[in-house]
Amino acid sequence: MSKVLVSDSIDQAGIDILSQVATVDVKLGLKPAELIEIIGEYDALMIRSSTRVTQEIIEAGTQLKIIGRAGVGVDNVDVPAATRRGIVVVNSPEGNTIAAAEHALAMILALSRHIPDANASVKRGAWDRNSFVGAEVYKKTLGVVGLGKIGSHVAAVAKTMGMKLLAYDPFISTDRAEQLGCQLVELDLLFQQADYITLHIPKTPETTHLINATTLAKMKPTARIVNCARGGIIDEVALAAALKAGKIGGAALDVFESEPLGESELRSLGKEVILTPHLGASTAEAQVNVAIDVAEQIRDVLLGLPARSAVNIPGLGPDVLEELKPYMQLAETLGNLVGQLAGGRVEVLNIRLQGELATNKSQPLVVAALKGLLYQALRERVNYVNASIEAKERGIRVIETRDASIRDYAGTLHLEATGTLGTHSVTGALLGEREIHLTDVDGFPINVPPSKYMLFTLHRDMPGIIGKLGSLLGSFNVNIASMQVGRKIVRGDAVMALSIDDPLPEGILNEIIKVPGIRDAYTVTL
Ligand SMILES: NC(=O)C1=CN([C@@H]2O[C@H](COP(=O)(O)OP(=O)(O)OC[C@H]3O[C@@H](n4cnc5c(N)ncnc54)[C@H](O)[C@@H]3O)[C@@H](O)[C@H]2O)C=CC1
Ligand SMILES: O=C(O)CCC(=O)C(=O)O
Image (cartoon, rainbow, N blue to C red; front, side):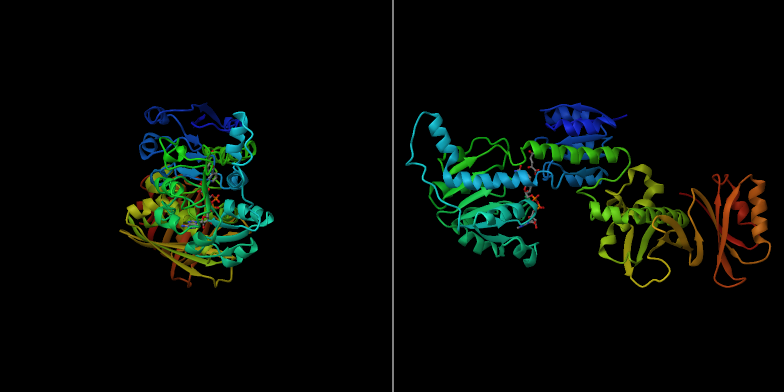
């Protein structure tokens, strides 16, 4: 049975799902060295934001197949290191969207009405109504930086509170922003005009210290800034200095450059600063959502199925996956077949995506073809995560072409592999919605479903040759399940594709190519 380690606190709903397929160990608060010590025993690791999954931990996780982050941000996982090792990293892109958006909105209102400090003063026994005069958000301008899932929900709710909305997100269309009632503007304008600024962007090299002394200086002296996205997007030293100097009006932070927050000037500031300990996703509802979402994906991967929200498999979102699944199988089979026909070391793989596959959405098929191509060399070590990297490291040049104009099938895939032993090609299509068919081998038209064991010959189309090959195989006790010849002209060159019930016995290929008229023979196992 598989083993899963849960190293951060996860809702029981997730543990119950994992327990259907694995032994689950919940070990909270492990030190990095302790995690390194035990991770080698586990097939999967499930975390929230406290565990830092470093390259060292990933390298010690020799059995790891999947790392599941019960939340959105995977910045606590060394994703490139996991990708290199073929480990799938999954998250829950939507499970805590509402929770995080509501926390940001709560921060905006709490800052405006000084709720935390007013509450603390009453609890201390005071009744001070003068120190906590607030400001209304109605008709004020909210600047939303990052109009993704969380930013969009914040914008939608803020709109209903009567706020004017500005947004900055270079990857969002003006139409989408307008639908949300936001005016898309440049960042400088947003900084200059906003009364409230709320950050909903990932932490990347471009967004690190996006809020710094220079950008803070552009804001209104009354501006209040909220960060429920990621620590490090704000330069905390510069923020504390700006608040002290009255250059901005207030700040509410849920996330910090280093967590837990250590010594910080921010702690010493007054009611203009609100600090929460990374609570954005901490609602009962969100924790059930993310735990179920990620546990289901871990369960699926441990059962050999694909994950729906893998962050390190390019272009393989749930909708794409559903649509492409049968074609992924086709691409992988063709990759495996052409790799075996080519033999030797493949140097160039030409992939032609035809018909309905001639769109950019078909990119995962290229990865699937590479996975198939590398299967003979790497077996289970190659997967959708690392296939492209492995191909690159082996110096395989991948050339993709797209051609929308075919007639016989909705979509076909054509793979041509050139290696140290020559060039071979295969084409395949789906019959109905799922049945894989080979429609061409080395330029000869055929129409056969692939089978586990196959034999291909290149021969001269002449009387008696099929009988001779049949007798030879019979003398080696090889049972033929089906056979088809593909030729372009009568009595010219031809290809024979045979499905056989068992692997071809050792040495028989040499006998086959001695049959007069047969020029070459290849055996493959799919
Ligand atoms: N405090 C907490 O507990 C939680 C924090 N988060 C964090 O909230 C952030 C947003 O999450 P989602 O809305 O789910 O992500 P998302 O991916 O749906 O949206 C992010 C948006 O940021 C935009 N963006 C990327 N780079 C940008 C840049 N340089 N400038 C402006 N916009 C940029 C993207 O185009 C996208 O629209 C993430 O950092 C996530 O980790 C998420 C959940 C809980
Ligand atoms: O797991 C948590 O509570 C943190 C959530 C978070 O920051 C995220 O989902 O990106």
